[in-house]
Length: 357
Ligand code: NAI
Image 1 (cartoon, rainbow, N blue to C red):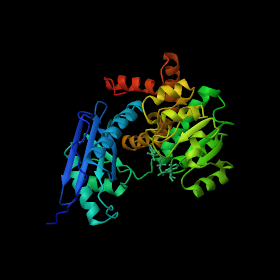
Image 2: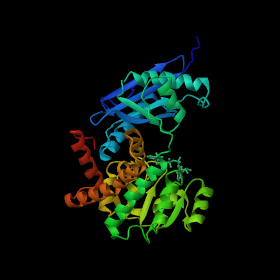
Image 3: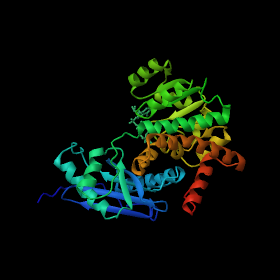
Image 4: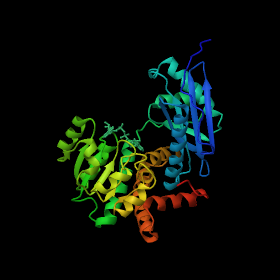
């Protein structure tokens, strides 16, 4: 029998106590498995959320990330009116990841699948950072767990939802012209950001693009007749709309006074560095569309596949993100609260409890 020694990071805590409905640790030294499954809330259905496969500085950091991302999935599904709860798992990477298709990788995800199967369907995994479609197929076929293994990339659908959200916010501010004539800065020209830029351009916006891969940003800018800025300058570039589509926490408390855009709507999860940024943005006259509302197009598409929706039904459901944003912005204005608070109140009502602010 092979025993894989696996000196995983340790610390005194595995998680924030009671942060989730269930937090499950998984270990099997024969395949080098250390994983954490966080099932945040199953009020609305089984907890659906991706499997993240990466290194962590400590066990606690891994558990916290699983719990935090699981809670965000609860909000995303509740606001998108999908029949899922929120969950997420992390598989702790130690050293280099085994190559796709290798027996080691297959053994790891098969074993993790067996452990997921023990949740009896309360946790349904999908692809996330570091995992591949074939890992989900292993979890399903060898591990015997339910897993979402859609072969269609969610990114264009996520982009369509972000565009719908951005457009709704623009109409709220500027009237029916939508994005026409507005300047939109997109940070992160990856699989989502590129499509967001194309959709905004197609709607008459002037686009400014930023990516650490400057050649990528420049190529698209040339094609769309836009320009580029260094990535760290993107939030501070003169614009009507800022669309963060790369990394988390780009809006910090002390940067808000320097943000020229009056609308922030993008795909990146956790755009706000801290919860108090929502109020500070509002005080500065900036409309922030909650990321967990704007970036739900991908999960809506996954659900459309599971539910057997036609392509038209799926696209219509994604486009309703725009109507949802219109409703949230109107409610926020009427009640004198932030759009984030308006969204959280909707989640409270759907879940029958007060979610953590
Ligand atoms: P991606 O990996 O395809 O693209 C990310 C892009 O951002 C790359 O072009 C990369 O070079 C660039 N980048 C990385 N760091 C940067 C920085 N500091 N400044 C500027 N650019 C930087 O990722 P994808 O799929 O387009 O996702 C973008 C964001 O949206 C991520 O935060 C992701 O978590 C989030 N998201 C994506 C969904 C999807 O369906 N793909 C669904 C929901 C959220």
